[in-house]
Image (cartoon, rainbow, N blue to C red; front, side, top):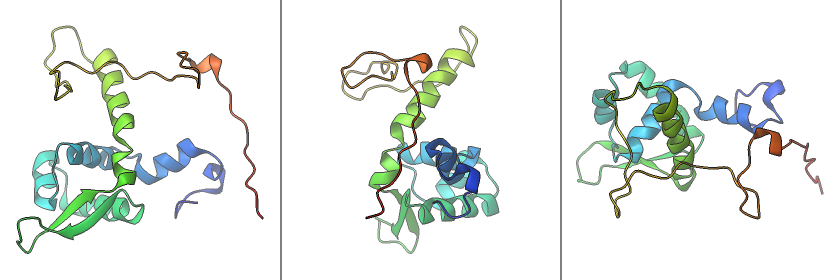
Length: 152
């Protein structure tokens, strides 16, 4: 279980994820990391977040394995926060949130940023939930079951 996770969230992957990365600043830090921001000062400048909050969130993101801390790539005395494989796996989550926001939180014609495919220079296709056979699924097409871990 994630350190600090409540017993109620113990079996719920959504609750555990929110406890690990689900606050606003953590997700904004991760978003900026996808835009190649790596240094504390760069995160602080981009986000305008208080230094104590940024330090706390980065510490937690390192502890849960989203970032590694490495010496700066330019040889300076600074540290860089580099996304791990685990951290890069959050990309579809951030894209999905972005696409939901683009669809529902902006008025027509309102200025916003969009995410483009580097190769085609086109806006990304919407992320869908698909069955193992490729069929698009909605909430009523799925259900949860409890998976009991094998203790042997």
